Structure formats: structure tokens, C-alpha cells
Length: 139
Image (cartoon, rainbow, N blue to C red; front, top):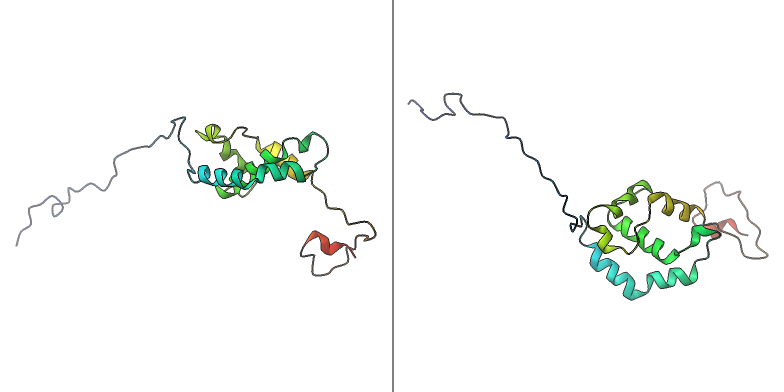
């Protein structure tokens, strides 16, 4: 039995046609789930609570609530390092965030945090296993 289709005669092309996709619309948000997440965080008072409860010295602590909300959103969107927080500044993210902080600003904010033992509980750093929380360093 003789086949007459192009595959049988070796004329099939295995080369994919060149194509590309460009997502440059200024209204596109790569992580659309951030919109309801940020709305929930706002209604739960995350930004307000962080602004009231966090005390970070110098200018690094300015707008703590917005910075905490940015960090939460970045982690939810898949950022696993300070540099990855740049994803919050791409595409239409500026329409989601009132302020899109540079990754270096968010890193400086995080590095400004310190842990201090309560009065009367001096730090102890002898744990061979390592602490499970910063409070474990206080006696």
C-alpha cells in the first residue's frame, strides 16, 4: 500500500513558525489576584495597623503601612527576594498601588528593624540549635 500524503514523503516541516507575544499594555496586571487581596488587606486594616504599631527609626520608617502592604503584595505575587519586589512597578501595577516603592527602599525598611529584649531580660546567644524566634534569645 503506497501512502501519498506529505508526511510519508518526508516533506513535513518540524520547524515552528516564529512568533512572539508582547504584553505592553499599561493596564495589564500580571497578578490580577492582587486587586482583591489588597482590597481585603485594606478592609482588614493592615496598612493602618502597620502605620500605628511599627516604629522604625529615621526616614526608613516613613509610610510603614504602605511599605508593609507592598511587601505582602510582592510576596503573594511571587517575589522571594528584595530585588523581586520590582514586579510591583511593572505594567499596570501603578494603578493598583498608590505608591510603588523601589526594591532598595523596601530592603532598607526591612533592615531597619531590630529586636530588643524586654527590660530585665538580657540577650543570651548560646543556643547550639538556634533560636526559633527572636524572643528565644532573651532569658
